[in-house]
Length: 355
Ligand SMILES: Nc1nc2c(ncn2[C@@H]2O[C@H](COP(=O)(O)OP(=O)(O)O)[C@@H](O)[C@H]2O)c(=O)[nH]1
Ligand SMILES: [Mg+2]
Image (cartoon, rainbow, N blue to C red; front, top):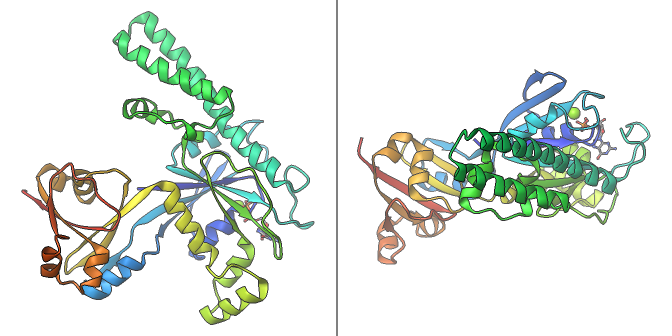
């Protein structure tokens, strides 16, 4: 459901990152014109789900997942802009930009010298330019619609107003993710696939022994620094050996895989809710601010259609009380909520619905 595109210049470490996040399980390769898309489903590590599974003893444990796509363009296929790459990136819910810091005579850099700031500015600039093109086309189309009175004039005007505002921001070199939109505006532009509006994580790919450089990261983006190639080598090592290796090489104690997945989760601005029965303990992602009816729909459309109420209790308290729901009731932590209840991170939900 949540799709994340890995983007970056050639030889920056995209495939290395993909391998690290998929733990070398590989992916499904598809060609799309000059693009090669490698796709895999990656579970989010979730200690709370692990604990719930141990406590309740359900048969299966189903973590929340994301779909990861390594988006590689054949050299020379982009013709100065993003070309066909734009449409592929437009389908993603969030983007990861891989930026190369590692040196290397053996690995040529497509722009010559290694210069992460230049690459970062270049990549973000391309996203913004692609958005500008989309918005300018849209503005023209709206103008025609207005002349032909294809739709109610008021609707067209409202869309024109948002598009103009977005264009104005881009002209001031502001990526669209920094621009707050109200619900209606967000809905109007949702179908445009605007690239600089997508949540962004920058992964700075360091070489061995390299310090993290000072970088101006695009506004509204998160950043993780990692020596991807080195971290990938550690994947196949037993834990204690890897820990020694980390210390010897001065790597951060938390593996990059874990740090990057945590940053991705934060970038997506999602919350996790849980369900369980004898058959399975399961974690689900929802956009922050989503309601009980959204959660029900996430599980099953029938559940949203026949929604009656949600029983809700927080997973931390549930784990602490060793699964004693009576104790939670006494503490007022087990609640009955209606369809508009805003689901909180860590809620366990039991949805009552009529079939
Ligand atoms: N020395 C070094 N080489 C790296 C590092 N990360 C990637 N590489 C190498 O750089 C080349 C390009 O990496 P790859 O992940 O295939 O880049 P992609 O073109 O963006 O997918 C490969 O030969 C990698 O082994 C790194 O941190 N240090
Ligand atoms: Mg690659």
